[in-house]
Length: 264
Image (cartoon, rainbow, N blue to C red; front, side):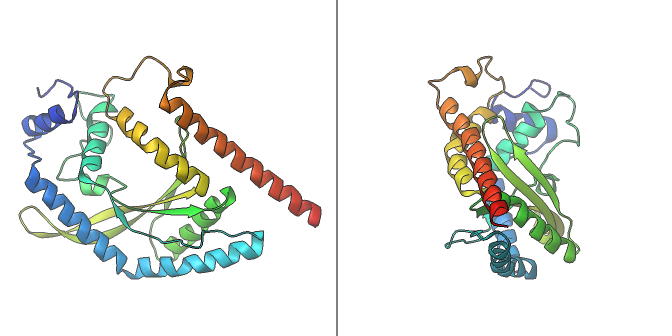
């Protein structure tokens, strides 16, 4: 089993046990939940989080002055979210096995194992910012990047544009928290904080896409059939809807900019 590629989560757990002496059981799940809940609590009461939340009103006012449009919805709430254990485990399975082109050797960057995976999985702690228009994504990204740099925190951003119609900006910064090990010792761990920035239309599509995207990522073998040709499939409808709405958002921005040029 150690060199046989696990074909599902059950075999993956067996592989972790045999190849790396790592037992992932209910005790470990409870430990994971305890760690992530504590990190969430500490982040929410941190100076960094309070100031970032307060700054959102300032960003909205500046955007409206510059563009003449509303940046966020009136009911905006910046909520700290934690990755569920099942989703977390699935991601380690993908990185260690499904996407590992070097199997049975370790993937590029090394194995993701309980001894290191809090620091290597970059979206355990995350939040979502939804803006009304496409240009708001980059506007908010620049503001948060400047805020992080002013606080001597790293800030990396990735523009996501996936085949399945997912569009968003993922911004990452890091913050160190004190956590407890399984042996109840205290240690410092640097957690990535993922800030997803997307538009209202794309957030609707994200919710539709999520189920199909998660199902596909669990499969060891990808289907030879292209979803782009299966017009009866759920993927065909939702994925292309994501691309179409992204195009429409671009057209909205084009019209806005032309109107503004005519007014000057």
